[in-house]
Length: 191
Image 1 (cartoon, rainbow, N blue to C red):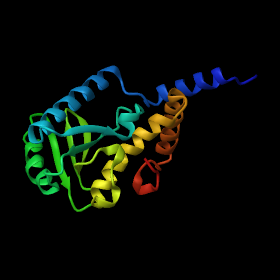
Image 2 (cartoon, rainbow, N blue to C red):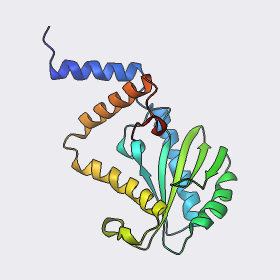
Image 3 (cartoon, helix red, strand yellow):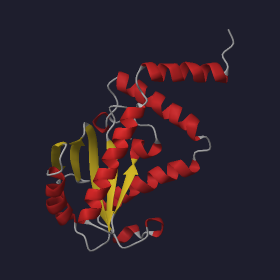
Image 4 (cartoon, one colour):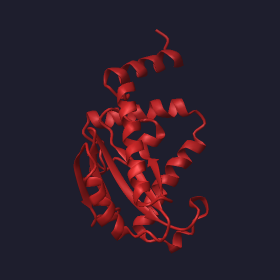
């Protein structure tokens, strides 16, 4: 039997579907609601701020068990301390938030929460500079890492010649790694 590109792709798609590597339409609607609510909450705390998706959600390769990674980008006059104290408390009071925990001593401090059953990781970056022309030497490490996560995601989207093939490959690698308990930063699997 001759294996063609089309038959291989069909087989991969079937394997990915069978292993629930794609978010459902209902799941995507819930994720959109989560994003909209968190964007409103962030802009209530920081009206000039932006909530930027990064990682698998921005790349469009998330699955039902994936979290949403977000970068909370604010002007320079908003501090990390205020994000960790004021905005964190604000988020913990949002109806339907069933879990809200700050990991503020990490290299990249984050707020982890579960909203409407969806896991969300929020990073914070504060800068007065344009993200495309940013002077990285002037940034604290946590801000730099958050901004780099956003810029790397956007770079991938800009250089991939065939986004659909990339998505199938990325989902396949993730599925392979998960089935072998290798899919986590702790196991050495890079996002």
